Image (cartoon, rainbow, N blue to C red):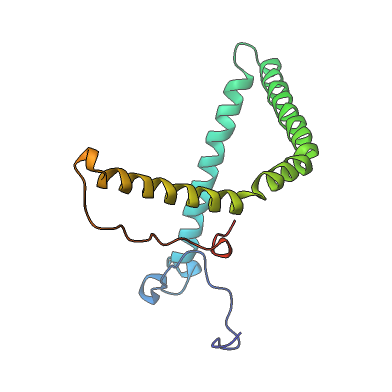
Amino acid sequence: MLGQAEGHGVDPDVEVLDDPGVMKGGLAAGGADPQLDKAIELLMAELQKSAGNINTLTQQVSGPDGVPAVLAQTDRSLATLKKILDDVAVATQRMPAISKNVEGSTANLPALLTQLQVTIQKLDQLVEQLQRSWLLGGGGAQPQEPKQFSPSQVLP
């Protein structure tokens, strides 16, 4: 722990400045404790949040169908989760075959790309020849040789 002084405690989650003027001898002497006040405020906020969750659950349980409705909803959720896990189990068993198929399908891609490149080059030459043809009103200069990638430059 470079750069830290010995005896340094844990950094607080919430910064509260201690004002000696406010504290005036501590709680026993009638002073205030800003840190304690902030801790109580945060605790009350958490309790209110929890109370809201409990109220929602209580309303569901004490609703028209009560506990059986909550249990039925839980059963439906668990059944859906089981179906998802079963589907994942089936897919997991098929993964080796799927990866072999993908590997086999992509093995010839460099050769296919090279063939495609040669075909496009030939088509470009034919288009240029047609454009220079006297039947189409051509008659220009000889075309430049297009650059072709070598098969070793084509990566999968």
